[in-house]
Length: 162
Image (cartoon, rainbow, N blue to C red; front, side, top):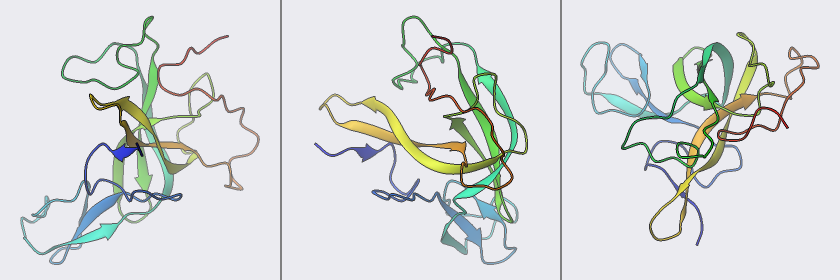
C-alpha cells in the first residue's frame, strides 16, 4: 500500500519537493497555515490557496523531552525507551512562521538562524497497515551559508548517542 499524508491539503503529496499548503488573504495579504476559510488577521473570507515557500530559517527550537499525552499516536511517541526529539519554528521568507518537527539536526541541537527545508517523514502506521506521513524541516545542506555543520541522521525516536 502506498503511504498517505496525515491530512488532506496540509502539504503537496506525493511530491519529491513537497510544499506546505497555506492560504493568503485577498483583503490584507496575510498568510495562514494550515489553509483556512477565513483570514486570521482581518476576518475576510477571500482566502486563496497558496503553496508556501519550501525553505526558510530556523527562528527558534526546543527539545521535546516528554511523552505527548493521548490522543497523540505518532511512531516516536510510544518508543521504549522514550527518546526526545527537536521541535522548531521555521520562518518562511515573506510569508509566516511554521511550527514543525525538526529532523537531521546536529546532535547537540540545531542553531537559530540555520537554513531549513521542508521534507516528509513517516509518522505512524494506521490500523490497515498504511504508512502515514507528515511534514518536517531539516537543515538545508544546499545552502552556502550553512558551512560544515555536523549533521546526525537522527529522526524522532532514535537515540541521540550510539
